[in-house]
Length: 112
Image (tube, rainbow, N blue to C red; front, top):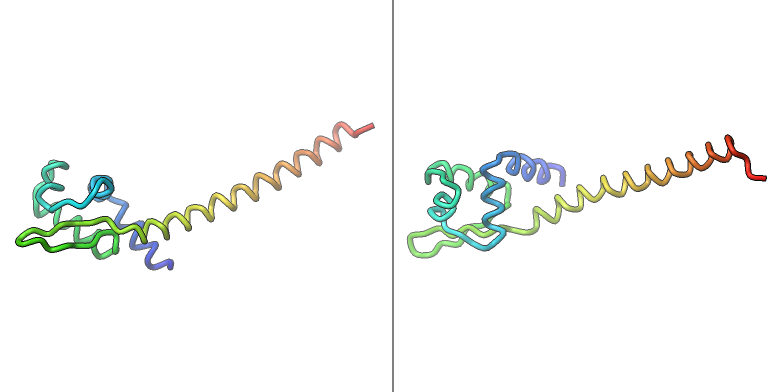
């Protein structure tokens, strides 16, 4: 899982690729439309799409002489699970801190 996660994070580390992902969240698009909406040239857009493709974030559907790019959801599920592990860790730490602070308060102000 860590290699796949690293590829995903690398692919999303570029602002243009993040913008492409945001566009594709609304639905599949051909390269030319992605380039036009982001004001990028087509070779630059294709380069970014290749990186997204290598990270399995997108898939291609050929349609005549066009290539339609679709966003894949699976890599984002892996990313969600990974980020939620931090949330669980933080909740656990906050719970321990709360217990410690209550213990400290009881030491300073003992209950009668």
